[in-house]
Image (cartoon, rainbow, N blue to C red; front, side, top):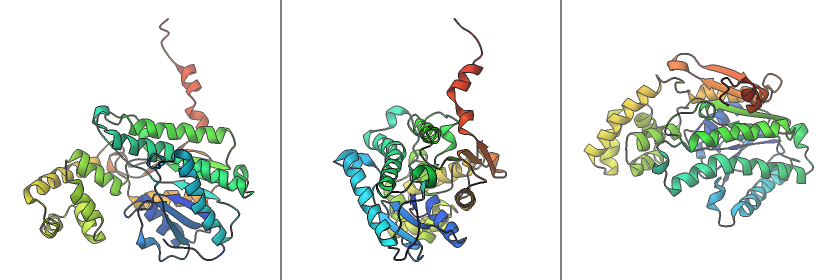
Length: 339
């Protein structure tokens, strides 16, 4: 755990694992002289971020379903961790929350066993709601005015707007996030509330899903490579280097034929995904968008921001006001009268 020891105003960012959007955002935001210190919250440590004096890390499981004491234990533990940070940096409250923690899953409903269901419900849906609740509660306790000073950015997915087959839990969890942000905005509970809906991002979450769920690759192999050399991980799962794969198989003592077959499928799936309807976003470009949203509040008011790379062409960012997503508007536009 890294600790910030000087007086600063904090931004809380969930999801800062290696090769994540959160990790890239930290580097980009602080390199551009962001005025807020970044407090990263994740269940995985990320030593590459700790050299920056404007960054502090908290190791914390963001799935409330993992706590035997339920929401009470989750909230008390999170607030205690954040209270210690605020005391250290002498800040009266948290000015910005970016929720980038998430999991991605794929398959029919019956393929989602209890651990997979708990991970989706817990991290994406319940976790995002409870993290925001507890930060708002802590701010209120410290006398910080959430409606006048708190910016909330929920990193979701285009799949919250564009439903696709074999995402029976993932897509609804993302759609619920939009409704949650909409309600917070409509109630004036925070100063600015944004739902960021990117297309798939080229991060470890996407790699893991393509490798395990779609290519049927070994979970143990993925985790051991992910936990080792960053250069080797990049070579195998981003650059699709067969030489790096063979070297890893030999060193880690995995079955050559089994891993190689999964690798061939993985590379094919990865190549095809970039040609998809929404493409795959580069983490650097995605982080640049997030940085602008944070540092230019007048240019990026509350609403839904959709980022995509249609058919792998050029990155597009489009904005929708929450009012445009009203289901009542949909009812008024409903077509055929059937009764």
